[in-house]
Image 1 (cartoon, rainbow, N blue to C red):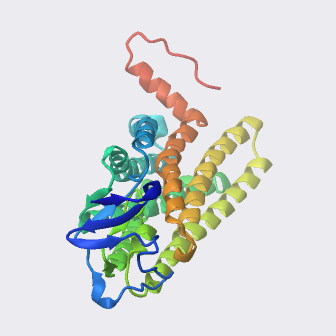
Image 2 (cartoon, helix red, strand yellow; image 1 turned 60 degrees about the vertical axis):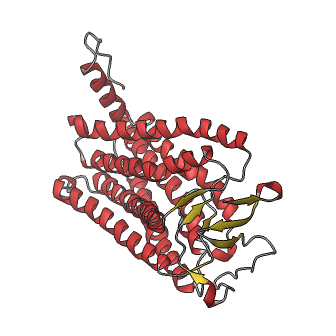
Image 3 (cartoon, one colour; image 1 turned 135 degrees about the horizontal axis):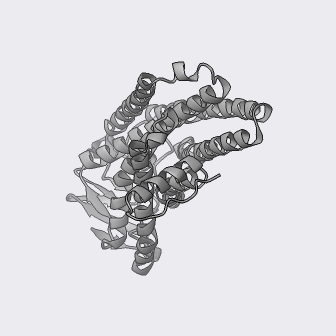
Length: 359
């Protein structure tokens, strides 16, 4: 694939019979923040992209990361699948709140399956990165955006559900019907998919400058966009507008909704009811802040202010750690989920003594 320079940095690559340079070295023509300096005669459509990942790191360190991240991957799948199964099989959880929570867990499972297996495989492969076809790279990018966008919208739908349940309790059963729940879920999925199709098409319609070395653990939008030739202003503006629509505006609405919810909680009801409602809102708000905080920090920035090496390190957090925190937050702080898990386990364990419900 190529040879490795001092410090493990990739110096020169040969990909698909063409010569490729790392734009971080002086031997290669520098790229401006929005416009490539390559002549138009050099603009090509690469026959494959190479996801560099951490292939330049020492093998021992990569094996150590694999050993650390594999249990997190398995725990993330197990935790989210557990929430999804409980939301499906436990009658006490057949409510709008747990309908959306089950949908969120399903999205997290798909999100994890799209990103993590290839990232883990990259730790064990020889130096040089993983070669993927452009169609595979585009599919991974599209699925990542679709699932991430759907999750952003789904968290906003969950905030709406809690707002109606606590601030409009008399009208809640008539408003949050089964049809509305499915309609909101479908809207979230369609919205994320339309955004993914638009962003992925906008990026992959660009020509690329002598190759496709993706300095990331997957085909992330900024990591691929910096490889494009010509004027990238339109694509960068589209990315920033998408971040505004999917991150900033929903987060503002979520914060306003939960602020109103907290005001209502503190003003009415008994101590036990306030505590239960506050724990539910705190769980949802924690997940929303984690998700929107990571996404905003990663994508609501112009290309000129980015460091792909830093982005790659941060990706280890939002790919491996953040999805694991969601089931931990919802199960450890949610007594309904704890009670449902206890009932399901006791029903499937003959002779097991039924324990006292959590108070």
